[in-house]
Image (tube, rainbow, N blue to C red; front, side, top):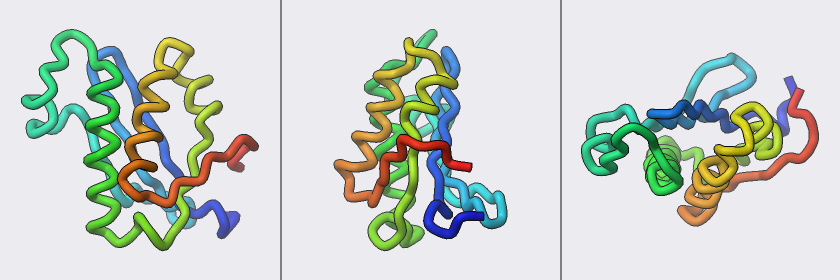
Length: 119
C-alpha cells in the first residue's frame, strides 16, 4: 500500500442513512465511523424518509470529533477522492458528500482532497 494515502475517507449514502468511515488501508480496518443510524444523531436530526445535507454535515462533525479523540485529526492526512465518491453515489448526493467534507475541514481535520485514483 502507498504510505502517503494510508487513511482514506469512505462514504455510504442511502435514501435514509449516511455513514462515513475512515479506513486504514494498510490493514483494511475501519478506525473511526459516524452514522445517522446512531440514536444520538437520529433523534436530533429527524430525517424522516430521507436524510439531507444538514444530516450529512452533522455526521461529518461527529466524525471529526471522533478523529480528534483518536488523535488522527491534526497529525495525519486523511485522503478523500470527492469526485470518485460523487460518481459512486450519483449526482443527487453531491451536496451530501461536500457537506461531510466541509464539516471535516471546518472542524480541523487534515483532509486532503485527491483528484487521482487512490489505488
